[in-house]
Length: 373
Image 1 (tube, rainbow, N blue to C red):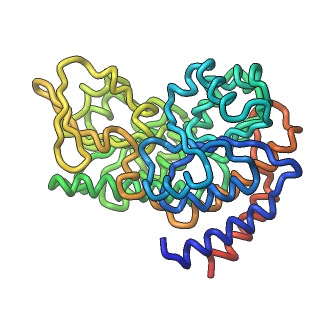
Image 2 (image 1 turned 45 degrees about the vertical axis):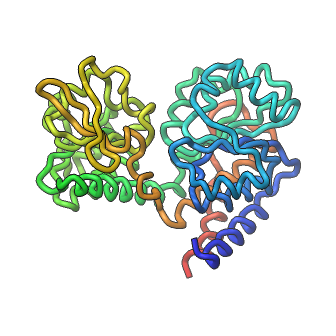
């Protein structure tokens, strides 16, 4: 990032932070993609909360960004296992923030498995969670009842531009990897599993590139939406998997089970928009498949009479090329800052919440002042 752009970003976040200063600063733990521009956002979180640790997503850590953040904030290793076991999660929080009021800033529902225990047994108080992604949103809504407020920005209108551009970046990276192997998109049948904001963006962009696109979604409303937009909609999921030469998973949940992989068309490519642990049941792949490298960030899975290709080991394919969506991501990050102030008040009931429309409007107005010149 150019020096002038970094200065603009720092000034923008300072302006946003100034609008959402809480009366009492809570402590916070921040899960994030530690990309090159992310230190500016981390500093803005630290301006509103006592930032006890940054937990970067393992597959998206820029070394320079990590070094910059480590100068003022501990950076701890993040894994699903850390918060899958409530006792381990509780010990971690007690080590970093015993007796404090804490806000958990999440990307992907990491805190969901232990949330009840953390709220019940932590020596301080869990003020709430802020969740940034659709798959994380689903993890929290699947809880019988969240034990504290969960403020989700995953379905915010301010996230729509980011989701559209993430869809573009997914298609770009998918095509780049295929071209690296001498393959192209046009003429290939594609199956998009999941027709939410990301899946619909991916489907439209693939169609614009001359790809035959079929959509599958478990939600009949979304299937109807896909049909109204001119896409073929699979009535038989298994048959659609067998016919597709490219499968893009955009559900935020489990999209391909272990038994689905042998049904893939020979030579099919598989890519996801989240992580392999969310979308793909690779551990359930039948015995007999071998893995070999087949070009840059492409793995060939093969057994007698069958083979398919997996992009980026099943992790978000767009992170191979920076996953850049330009300054639009700063809209959602600003909404996360607004959420810190909401949770710091300590007056929200347990359950799902969202940032008020008036705060979103204020964020959009500030963003336009800096990025619509």
